[in-house]
Length: 452
Ligand SMILES: [Zn+2]
Image 1 (cartoon, rainbow, N blue to C red):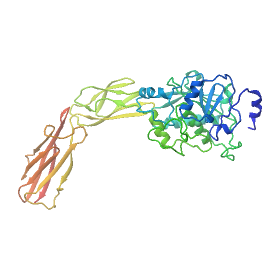
Image 2: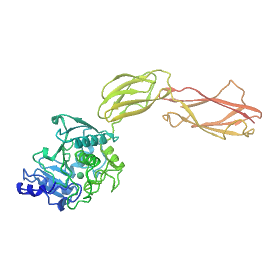
Image 3: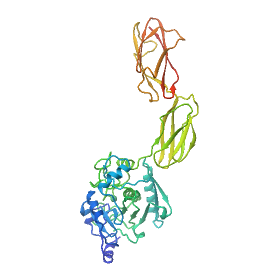
Image 4: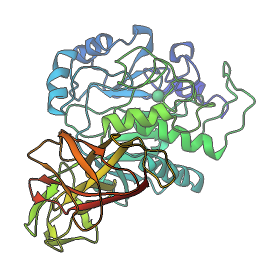
């Protein structure tokens, strides 16, 4: 990749540095994109500055403004100004304009069709597929799907030479369009198959490109398509839960030779932008009543439930389920199998089960006890649904079938206090039960044998 720029310069009216990751684009007067329409989009230019980009990082390259080397903004498309961001955020139920790495142009779909130009070589085709797999491995609502028709694609990955309007310089690894206001991803990632690290000014001139470099750089460009900006820059705002700097981020700019894969914070950012859907529905199912569970977004390929539940009917967005038995008193679950992963809701079925949480002092054969001693028992709902326990939803009774000589002192909230009344062999046995909206759960028996 000698200097093809010297030739191109002669041919093209206007050439701009498009120095992607390695260096500051403006330091690099090498060309990159051909000029087609030399129009200006002053509103977009103003927005770019408002978003925090420095003028020196914005290059007017024909149809695009290219920012920080590899983020392309189409002059012919609409982008949101900062004033619009609150409205967009509200639409996505986000609480603030908080973001950095997050562009103001939210992608509102989760299933993203990606077309790989068939004229790319095996290295780049495989790298693109691996990058897609890495995106899909993040626990987010996103699902990138390779499609084999450009017409069906949201994003096309291609070499710059596959696009007559685009040419990347030797020192630019890739370029990506950012999302606009239509809720869809940026439509293109261009890859420079001529890229070499050994260009003047490169931070890693001796490096030979590895397959992981290719994968990581496609991951990075897809990040721009999907609304992420550069981690190591102050334009845009910080995504909640991510730090101001993250050396391991695959979204660091000018870092083509060092980025490797998503960092934990990259995954946090992606999961924030593209949360997994949730299942809404009751937390308790009573008897054999049929209840509906609904997916908050996207579609389910299928639904599945715990063995104590059955699916009465299902669609791609909801499922009607009921208990297999009217006497069930147990936890269960409802799951939606989606392309983004399995979404699970834990529920309780039937009446509640009471659970002993503590005994003071502890009771065991061989322990030391005395007449008049009091013992405290504390209980809770095993399914964590009934709270607080009180006289209307929590019952206690002596079990009358065995010899005991103790008496109830108090029963208050979840606490029962008893008193030992005589010496010798003592059996303390009693039963408790609690009630939820399904009714009373089963009596549960507790028994202790002591020598007092
Ligand atoms: Zn970038």
